[in-house]
Image 1: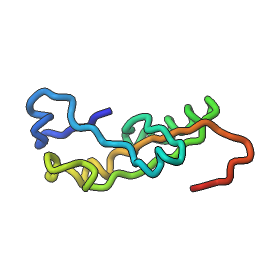
Image 2: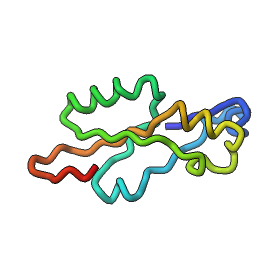
Image 3: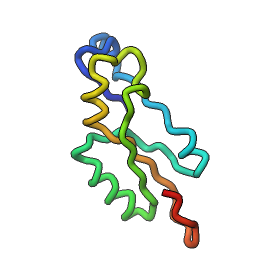
Image 4: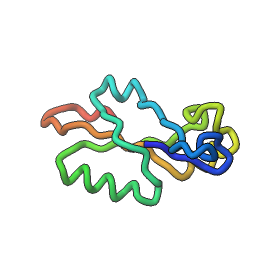
Length: 97
């Protein structure tokens, strides 16, 4: 999923924005990056994925994850979006959070 703002070159060129790569540590633990969610809608996504039987983890963005094209809007984007990760629930798996 992509996000954008008016000062990003990709936003003004008509592109959909920029992609945020998955956290490779979380991927190694079995988490799947689902999408970038607006902070106000994060709880809705958590409830949906939980109701479907997934474990859910959300992470806040760090400005360094956005890349050099978005230095002007990095702080706003980091405050406004969360990455949603899921993994299948396994009975007996120790909590690694």
